[in-house]
Length: 210
Image 1 (tube, one colour):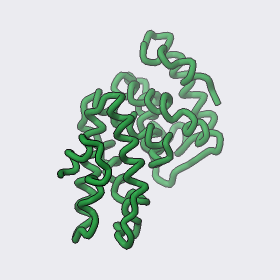
Image 2 (cartoon, helix red, strand yellow):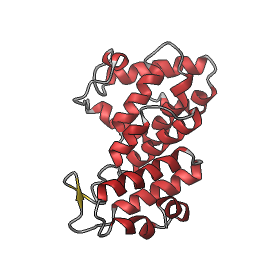
Image 3 (tube, one colour):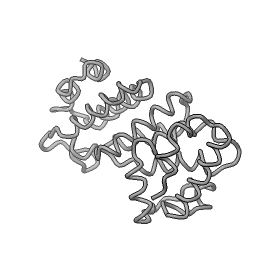
Image 4 (tube, one colour):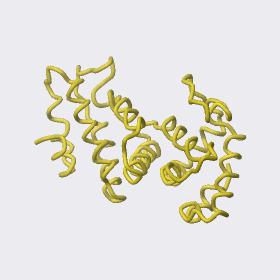
């Protein structure tokens, strides 16, 4: 059974099985996680729920002695973060991009994988430029919708990252902070007044503040 078939069947054992005794577990992990992110990009809401549940179940599997990048397979999810990061290089349709962000946000909320840095990039692209938020707004809203508590927590604690986030993010500082949250809130409120329906739908939750 291929990784894609295992995902479609929701079969955790079949997904994990190829890694047991594999000569090159890293190569198999790249293939496995690519299958996951590709499925996430094409998933609807219910399918995303099932996919998050499957990845969470996979993470609980243990392959004693099998490590990649000195990380335990599957407990530390080696390669997964790197594969997910690859998706942030672009190339997806708007719908697929929104689904991927929804997937990463849900995994973050579930405590399976911390994707807040990816969320920060998406929110920055949507709200910290005045060139037009349409391309990233739906994707950004998925973070407020599914990982709002985690975003707020990172903001309250002033979480930062070593990597620079690019020109737009530099204006607000590298990481989360209350002034940055306030700026996002003001932008969302302005977009809601301008008639962006996707903001109006969640504006009470999104713009509530910390």
